[in-house]
Length: 145
Length: 275
Image (tube, each protein chain N blue to C red):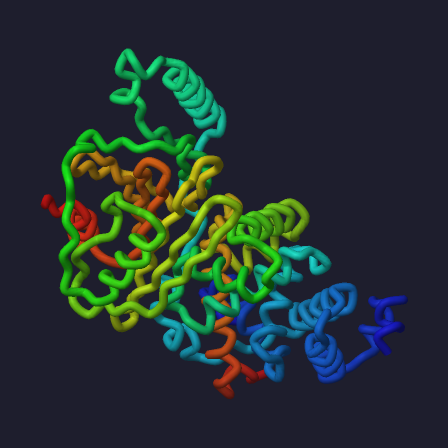
């Protein structure tokens, strides 16, 4: 195995090998589960929807836009409630999720992740990893064994 | 099969071929509510297998991903702010706010009543509504070539807003995509989205904002202040976007835009065209 490849890319390639027939929603669900986001919480659905929004339109780095769209989609929440629910699930996952998984997704050049990401950092990071995953699943070389 | 996985995940999974595990995983993920007690053990088993039989990473994969490290955001190097100092500052700010509110208006309290705000590890927020316009008698005019700004101004006037809060200038190319209005209890919200190619700008106003105010998620930098015509605007950078927030009496205004600092300041300055 190439020793210079970093943890994030290594894990994305792993996901690309085993989730090649998945859609983007399925891939994000796996990522959130690995990070320890509780799947039975309202925040799980909200953060999933927000990440897919961000992924579909990367220019949408504007939190008020994403929160507004998420709020309009789910109808029962205000923007503040959306933001709060997302922040709460991230906080919960940070305390219960595995450190290895957080390193896969948030480490950089072999340094371990040192603090809980903010909402926007989390959403944009996972959306970009999803983009990497999509890139890998299109390429035949990603299946080489 | 799924019940068997749940009941004794380790044993059953080890007996399944990798292709079968992949198929089971993808079947589970196609459901509306995938079960993590099925998904996570399968992933763990697959990772165990690859540890014993490492997969060859194709050559050139890293080169194909060149540039992704620069784009991907990191959380590693950002300093952790101490909470105790922040709590102390917030407490002092709250006390000052209470003291200032207690000063009778007849002794000139209005001139010292400033908009208070605070930083926490994650947020910037206003602690109190209230204006800090030191030039209440100056009237500003609204003149613009941008049709979208004209529409936004008309909407604000229809909502009874007489304060100057709408910019009169934007860089060339910005077009209005949508304006939405919403009423939440006694607060009205006006929200406008502009687009210029791949860039977006959001303008949001909360009118009659008497109680809690919005929290603005911050990046690693502090808010800088930009004072113009006696009004203090707080410029907050978060990733590639700049948010400008300010209070004008009971109107909380925010503009979020992906532009250079100079352009941002020019947009703000254009609000105050003297009549």
